[in-house]
Image 1 (cartoon, rainbow, N blue to C red):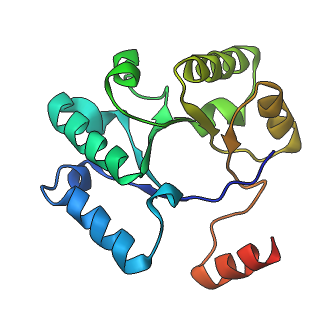
Image 2: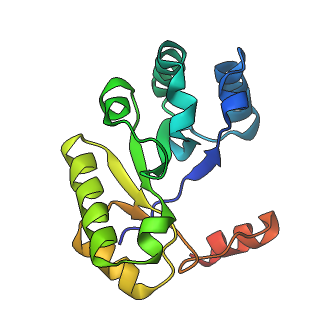
Length: 166
């Protein structure tokens, strides 16, 4: 698999609904010097309940060059309508489906990957902990993976060293 580094940030419904949210993202990008293409904001389906507001914010983020993922896809009240209405770039398969790759979970993962690929969305699988899971996802052409197989969460100094070692 190709190593693609991007900063992913979970965004709460409260943050997303702030009137200054897009301006806050712009300010943080300017302060940090991070190019927008390296920022991925992760939202859950619950954030999308206000369709007009969500669509407006997502379009502004897209214009900035920031990518947006639907996090934990398949664990809430998934609406496929969200995938066609909103300008999102990534779909994250919840780790619950990856943790136990039973026949049913495997079929669900395969279907999500095929659906996302057909919609032109990148797929990120969360919770990859074993090489068997990684191989399974690679066979299905999953675009990206994340999980403890690669690294546990690290403090900033250790992240810097990890990146230097790459």
